[in-house]
Length: 452
Image (cartoon, rainbow, N blue to C red; front, side, top):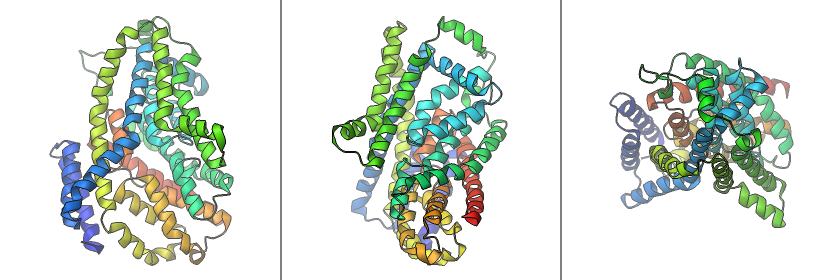
């Protein structure tokens, strides 16, 4: 199958999957895997290749983010047991005040995701989010959405995140990344505002599992939580398991972007890999556990963490299968072949093309790089071939590459599961939020296009 029938089959498959999960309460893993298999059959992927495609999608997701999720969750569990998460929450509150926890979470995510993938960033910062919820008594959903928004915005707009770098290189401005970074900072303003407003709004409408307090489970005050630990860790000890991996990944990105060579480059690249960076962070967390004289709890903490992350990993991997099935069909080629019909809409063309690819296959980075490859030979015809307009095109692609995050996106499942929400709540929060971010981004980008 190819052409418009394939597009319609894809849309129908997504609708069936959402209905199965939200209305008929089919487990997301089974719903996604079933829809992926049926779509592969309908799309005409050769029968002898379907099993390999499914296997590649499943294993590819595990290899890219599986260990990262486990190590990040383990760090978070240790930070909670030692009281370090509450200490970090205190530090954040001192910086921004008790009245702006959502803004603090959003800006923290925006900064962290400049060198770090948004998936990893959410896992790393989730303990702080949870502690801030306890510290300020604000909506857990609002804090989840605010953190997700901040991470996602810089993930698609600002190098050295791989997607914007690849898009800039493809469009011929790879040597002018400072311009791209500046444009990315400007393009972030509108979605940061929109994301904060939506986080506060949806936080009043949706309640996650950790907000449902019964008579048997009475919420503890912050003071009661602190008293349980006796004494909280020092600021450096609390911060090290989180900040060291971020610095390591940041140095790895800078090394790649700057073209460093030799031993220093090799070390930065090695420690900059998320798996290695989070391994180092885990070592710092274990040292903190030992300092708190709670090493006897380490086995149980690890075991409980694996129980929690298991479902997250398998659902995330199922999303990877759906993305792989779609990328193995003729859908991307069909969209590419009909790109000329969208040329007349100028700066909105990169946005729409990236949004279509993002929604179809799930990965923002793939949407960024694929759209940039399609546009590269068309930049002159579109009148977007000056350095400033090329950088603005990267921004428009980035805005499309966040529109929208749903079941075939690993980030959707990371946010939904770590935020303790159901898939149905994930559509109301993460999916709608990314639509709001994408549209708000394009408002700002359109205004910027009138100036540049």
